[in-house]
Image (cartoon, rainbow, N blue to C red; front, top):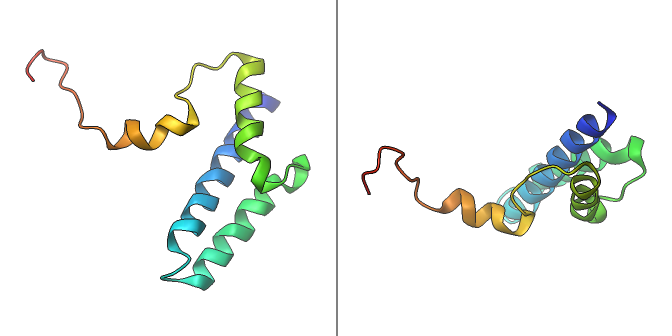
Length: 88
């Protein structure tokens, strides 16, 4: 159960950091706030935000979680959805 919470917190931190990065130019205050929230998510684990993706990979390797590799997430989420009824 502790691994599930750590994984959840790592995913939240990575998402907040990504949000911060993408919106820094248009809303610096919101970007700064989301970055701080990401840092706060990881404070109890003594994990630096810059290490969060490596920590997530290490956790997945340790517990054998079958996930999409982080570098493929953006590509996977942007690809057109496939219909399961056999029509293309």
